[in-house]
Structure formats: structure tokens, C-alpha cells
Length: 275
Image (cartoon, rainbow, N blue to C red; front, side, top):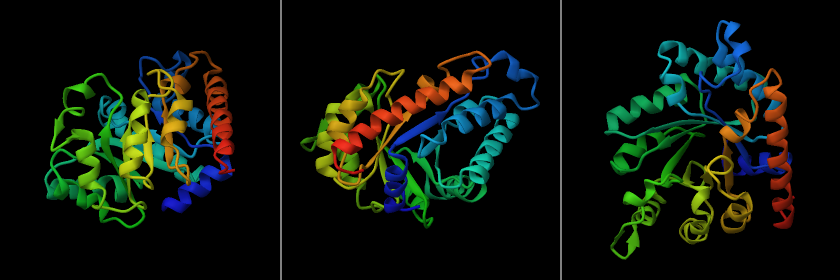
């Protein structure tokens, strides 16, 4: 799926919502534990409830790897379920990989060939040769970490050098490694005012924006500072949707939470003249 394909899906659904599939085994409803694969059953119900409002799903690898091989089976089952039942939805493996070239090639093969994901989050610290192997796959995307939403972002990302902050250096240096059809950036919602400056550097690239909802980011501020003439945003919500309720109706509640975000997104898309 290219840049235009993402935009078409956004227009069709009047949404730029990405739902994070981060199933903490201790938090999923108790009744699901009677299933052979409670994590997959939890995800399946969340997917069915939210797929009508979301253009992307983002499983975070940590929540599966912590369960060992069974977690990886749950992850593969989840991705296969999305592919079979909602083939137009964009799948981002939130893996935050990035290593020397040969290792990155193996990571790329795992996520793009074996798991059939559309995108993978990649850390830029080791430079271009650690990222290029992911960009060699036609129709696949790198989501490069630039400005994150956690408190520790202050430790490095805002430090100045060569007249710019580190996150700006990352974006300026990397923006020509790929194109607007295979490279997007993570830019946290809790720093929404920074999105305007990021847009000056990469006006046309998509931004994956975490931090809306449980982390306190403002969707309106993200849209105001980050939206471009093709929307250019995928806004992720995880806990605020998937753990909004812990009863046997948890999926219905998740669907309502996703719908509320979609309806708000539709307003901002309409205000921008995109729908």
C-alpha cells in the first residue's frame, strides 16, 4: 500500500485511527482464559469491534514476546485474522528494530515476508545502513522513531547540535533514505506543538502519532499542528480503547471508544476539506 492508498482508506472511513493491539494477559477479561489462546481471542474481538473505524492496527511485539512462543503464535494468528477478514487495513509491527545490515535484513524478512506486515517501527540510532534493508521491500514501510511521547524523550531527543535538536537531525538526515511511499515517522501526541516544526521538514510524509488517550495527548492539537493536504496522520490509541472495559462486553465498549475517536477525526478531516 502506498501513500495514496493510505489516504484513500482515510477518506473512505473518515478516520485516521490506528488501534494498538497490546494485550496484557493480566488485564484481559477473566472469561477469556478458558479459550485455548486467550490473547488471540481478545484481539479477535477487539479487531471485529473496531475495524469499521480504524485504518490501521499496531501490535506491539513486547506484549507477545513476553509470553514466549505461545505469544508469537497469538501474534501470527492475529495478523492472519486481519489479513483474511479485513484485507485493506494497514498492519504496523511495533517492534522498534534496527541493527547492523545483515541483522536488519533478517528482521525485515521476518516482518515483511513471514508475518506479512505492512510496516515496522525502526530505531535510527545505528544510521542509514541499519534502515535500508527494511526499505528494500516494495510496498512496505519503515516507521522511523523521531520524537517519542515518553518522559525520557528529554534525555536525548531535544539536545541541540549543529543548530538543531536531535529529533530534527534524525528527520533531516533520513528523509531521503526512502520516499513518502515507504517512510513515515513516529511523532508523539504529547508534544503536539512540535508537529508544526516537523511538518516544515517533512511536509508530505505520514506521521504515526502515539500518545492520544491514556497518555494525555490532544487529538485536536495533533490535527491542528500535524495534518497536511493528504491528512498525513495515523493516530494510535491502545489502552484507551482495548482496556476501556473489563466485562464480557469489553469489545462493545472498545467499539464505542473507537467510534468516538473516528467521529472526532471526521470533524477534523471535514474542517480541512479532505472529506
